[in-house]
Length: 137
Image 1 (cartoon, rainbow, N blue to C red):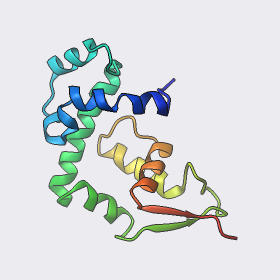
Image 2 (cartoon, rainbow, N blue to C red; image 1 turned 180 degrees about the vertical axis):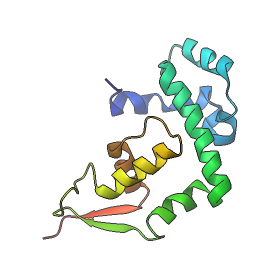
Image 3 (cartoon, rainbow, N blue to C red; image 1 turned 180 degrees about the horizontal axis):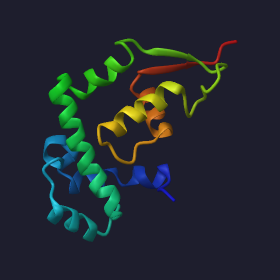
């Protein structure tokens, strides 16, 4: 079972402190000694798989930055540079998922991202303005 959003959000200050401000290029350089150090930190999320996933995801973002110039450019290319307005009455669209967020999840996994699922990806896309949900009839 995963962490609740409340517990995960409460870890943000510790993550920033222990993971050099969550600077992608620095986190991508972490090695096994860093994983061991983080596991020993009492206030950290100590799940080894999640720590390694964070490091792997930083490396995956670096690869995307090299290819697209930025992670933002990659994401916006995925929606053709425009926020996608999704009708909540359409099949498969809700406040927690949509076909486009499932597609992005699959693409991120192909690019070696870990611990990314359609619900988290959907919420990320909503927060970033990549998708918007219309609940009009």
